[in-house]
Amino acid sequence: MNVLDTLGKLWQQGHGMFGWCTECGSPSRYWADVKARRALQPAMFDIDLAALIHERGKECVVVGLDPIPCPRCGSAKTETRVTTPAKPMYLQ
Image (cartoon, rainbow, N blue to C red; front, top):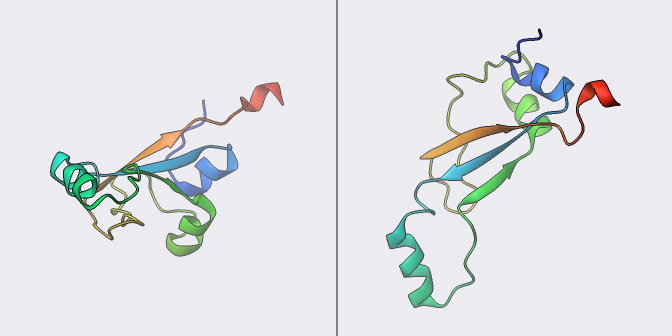
């Protein structure tokens, strides 16, 4: 069993990450966008794991990771989630 506890190990095993902004996803933000007739963008955003490793280091732990600012509004009120590889490593 391999423990994936650092960004480097996630990258090595083919995992990815995405984020969710609570500010952009709030109902009040949604209706403000509708009233302004702006194109609605989802509150979810992809995280470039290679760039994050370059910024924070491959030994940066995943649990307790400092917030990643939202690319749309810049808020630090974000949550991150790990995605699984598109194809399991044992099938490659």
